[in-house]
Amino acid sequence: MNYQKFTKCVLAAVATVAIGMSGAAMADEPDELKGRTVKVVYEDLNVEKEPGAHALYRRLQHASKAACGVEVSEKAKMVRRKSESYRCYREVLTASVKRVDSELVSSIHEGT
Image (cartoon, rainbow, N blue to C red; front, side, top):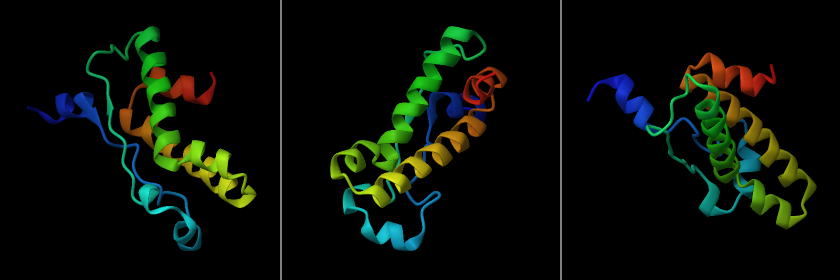
């Protein structure tokens, strides 16, 4: 299997909670969120067309929220933790969009 096909098959760019989070913030995170990786499969999508690009972007958003514990932080009602989770989410989503390397997905992310 060549690299491009593998990359399209499984994107593990939605990497870890460690992205964008300080060591102190990581120490406060529950063990189940530390170093969490979420795979995004999109071999079923044509990201060169708008419907496929939008579908992939939604998957990346969902995976980034899961990797950064956004739902957990909202339930915890801890301002610092919530802030860190959302910062992580934004950074992981941006990094994931860059790894996909699609003009259309990038333009969706940038809101253009």
